[in-house]
Image (cartoon, rainbow, N blue to C red; front, side, top):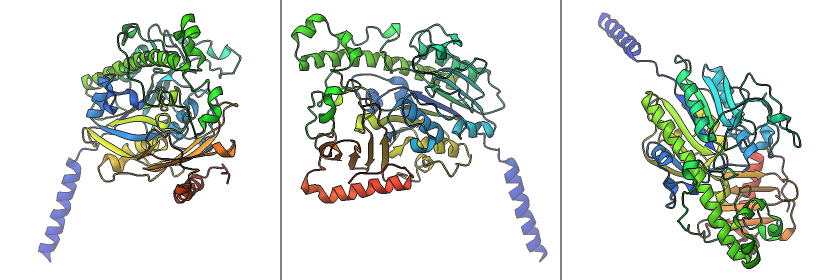
Length: 491
């Protein structure tokens, strides 16, 4: 009996000694970097051989790269609201471009702030209302400028954006220099001067590569002597697919029709070139300007990573790189985003966290923007609210699961008479898209992404695929129900 009691006592004593000697884990810092309109296809670690992005490539080589991360509403304002809340547009209330975000609602920065983190945001905001949940902010309210950006901070008066008025952009301060360079400097200065006794959660939102395509001086002549390869679908005629109906009015999507690209054409070009020749010339000019802005973003990714290394912060800082939406780089003759086609919905997503993530991982599962907020909270050991609609990616990052989703849900809302409403579902192989407000011939699209990655062959009206059509419509219906959306699909 005495021997048993002694053994129990010694075991308990050993356990206490082990617990006492184990250091309490330090909460990770969060550094969330999100550029604007950066297609994953404009990054070398995603397979682009035309441009070199060593900063982003370095991040990927030291973390995990997601091949199929997607935004469920591919437009600047709503996608940013999705990221903050972990909820779809119909739940967070921000469905359209330039719509005021309800800052009183729950966001992941607020949850970090409540948990004792120092929170901040730098760069493009584009949610109209004053930022909430941040101890400090230094933001451009709307699009902002590439040179000498006007920024607003907590001590400044905040006048919400209103169409037709200039009052919203009065006040604040001008930071001399190229926006992504000087905004990054401001962000790193904040990290350096923070309270070192607290972890930080910082959001850094560069403006590039969003239009207007005004590059940093160091890249003004980048690619001048290069002729870039054209995408195979540049001269798409949209036959049998929904853009066929809208192609003559698509000034917000087609390179050939975009007013702000006409500067690339001389009067001689306009008089003597046919549409295909014009498109070829416009594509070259557009892509070179776009890549010039990408380079400035990448430079600053390198600057951030060097800063973390130099200040002994790299090991315990979760670094995320993404973009607010995908972007067309001439595919289907398009620029811009909005559509549910692959280049538009796909975003770069790279996460580095040396304490957890193996270097150089690549994941090909379906990932949703709604997953970002719960993932960051979960990685920090904070509870994930039940009303967040995304799923934590931590099991993937730990190597315990290959995926957390079997399907992806998309809902883009009608904007004026140019961009139609679209609702859709994507599985690993198939995609179905519904345009509820359009005529029957153009109301549905169905694609086999394994056989038709460029989405050129609409299978919906092909009787040979009636079974697949029923299966995918059922999948879409179930996602609408699961996420409690209010859209009603036509027959």
